[in-house]
Image 1: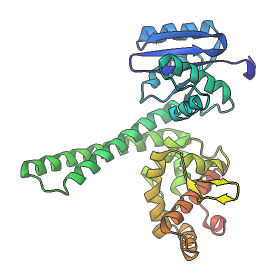
Image 2: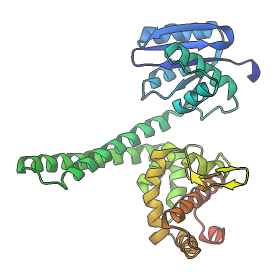
Image 3: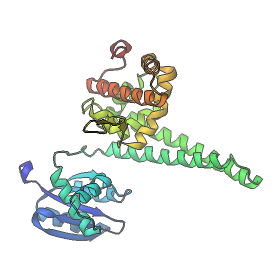
Image 4: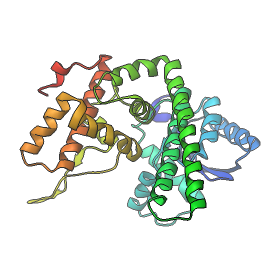
Length: 319
């Protein structure tokens, strides 16, 4: 079947059910979130020769459906709910319910069919779950530590100490599991060695990049910073020239990348440190200079992974 003839279904995923819409055939289907419901929906889609299913990220509820559809030979693409909602508003569709959402997802997929997304990777999905779990534990750790800054009865302080000890113990186990997955997956292990060769980058940063930015090494040096959310966007109109600001991107990956980049730019990486000092000497604010360093470093990583080569200071010193 030619790409232009590919039949697309939009699927709106909820906890207890999904609503599917094959917009090109004016067909709709609602199925419960059970094994039988998944079987019925995949059979219905196969009968109508659907080749591609598009659904929004829905807090994890979409994963079981995505797995069932892929097993049935249907390509699955997970999209950002904000993009679909903005698309609906731009089309003047202000009403919102599950049936309408499924139709809008299908329309969005038909309109932006040129962006196929990343192919499914079971090992990367496992790594992503481990990385997300680690991030969740770090958030719990921070909340407990923040509460300890305020006076509390001794029993509460002791409880917090026990909780922090348990969180640290679980973090160690998760980090070991993350390292094991990377080591056991050849293309992850190779990419990890490339990233770790950069002064200032180590284990947890490597895992966040491998899990959260699978496109590294496959996209242009303009797209890589945009995916991270470190690319400045114009804000001009007529003669007005507004300030450039970074927008969008993958916030959790960017947040995890910020502190290692700060350390690299101020202490550990001579190339990045020289670049950072040069920007400060030109009068750039520290935060602006750090964002520029993030942008420079993700471009360097994108190039290194594309070429399958390790860090070479002489290559990037003057770039």
